Image (tube, rainbow, N blue to C red; front, side, top):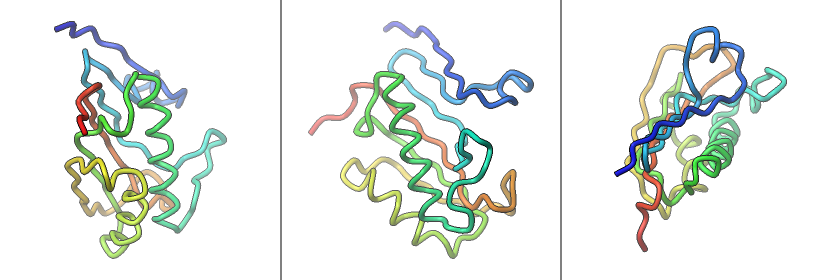
Length: 134
């Protein structure tokens, strides 16, 4: 098995300053780090709306997975962090739009805060390229 590692950057200024990647692919394994609904201009998409933030993050994931040669059907694990567990219904409703049929492992965890007060959701994702069978 070829376990070549490829790091993918999103262009966030802290990636170089701190030393992290948005996504790492090792062989067929794809790992996407904590992702929020921050837009390219630095604003938070869907401020105050967990459904919109989750949907936006999942759309980001589809683009990232494509860069790594993966698709949503290859997703094996999703970890969701929220600042308010009462929002889990809205989060799960948006998540289901993308992963209901795939059925990856999914964990939703409450956390006291994220980087900005208007961020309600942060999500991590793992995938294995070519793993999905129908």
